Image (cartoon, rainbow, N blue to C red; front, side, top):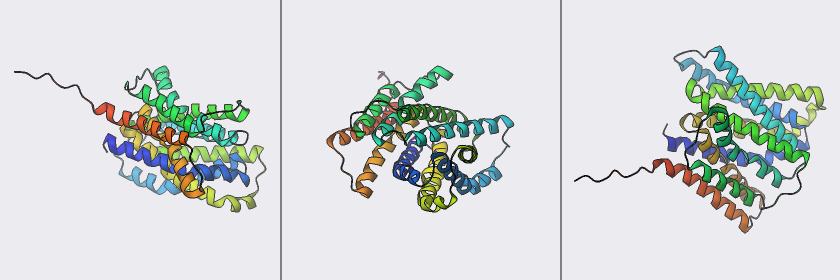
Length: 296
């Protein structure tokens, strides 16, 4: 897979995440946030398991114990991000949540440099700021006083950033992105159900009301999208992937217009343009080469 193809895959992930945002929000009208996370990623693990088994049967060598531990750790990061986001949505606005979640775009290159001394392509820094500005305008260009839910969403952005970094480091090394995805789904699902049964009132009859949201977010914006993320990140860096995944905000706005009849203000269109500019910078900058001096 080429870098351009990988970036197109990540754009597809952004579209699936953007489409699933409404379902993710409305599901909590019927069930608790941890129960939803547990069920969603249990469905994701089961839906992708056949593909992981196929990948395993074709693998040239088995995964080491260290590989399995890293895959499980990525699952813990996924659970932390999902749990913080779902819980945060209970006490914050969709506007604040959309912007604060997008902070991972800037956190990824910062954490990559801090933790692993990995300096991104110079174009990533202005592109990350452009993407963040775009998310700001898409969210309405304002944010209210920070609540507990807002701080939980900031924590969610930290988990997302770490998940992106660790997937980028290990999906390409092992050559087993689908297996990685299924392991992280399984870990996230088990942790979600464990917390739900410990602290939430679990009503199985309510699952029927949230079934469409659980199935859609589990199979499409969960299983398929996160698996494609792991596949795409084998061929690009974490900071570049973060820019392309920021397209989630654009797709969420577009699907809101198409499916829900929402109207996008002028600031929203400006936000879309800024995120598109960030994507183009990240895509085109690495292809620019200095012209060789002409010899005579």
